[in-house]
Amino acid sequence: MSARLHLSPAHGSHPQDPGAEQFARAAEVLGLLADRTRLVLLHTLGKGEADVTTLTAACGAARPAVSQHLARLRLAGLVDARKDGRRVVYALTDDHLARLVGEALSHADHDLSGSRRHD
Image (cartoon, rainbow, N blue to C red; front, top):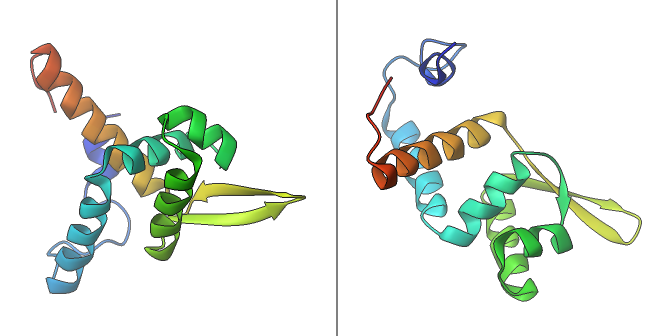
């Protein structure tokens, strides 16, 4: 099964012809993905829930910076947070994000490796 099937607007109840609101929201989401740290955070969360310590180790940024990025992602509705004792555990709000990040990373890998592109 190709990734294109999963991302196809015809799959599920997504509109065939996106309107201005969909383009505006997509631009907002893609703008948030344009930061390396946030991209690593979303990629890591695509594998499952994680706390700030785990996310800090994954992206190699300072803990305060990771917390600020997570706050932006929460404000945009891309990640959720829940308390687990004294820890805060983060998760993606939607599987579309994991697929979107995966596709972006696959595209980058093809560019960097010179691999033949495919559908």
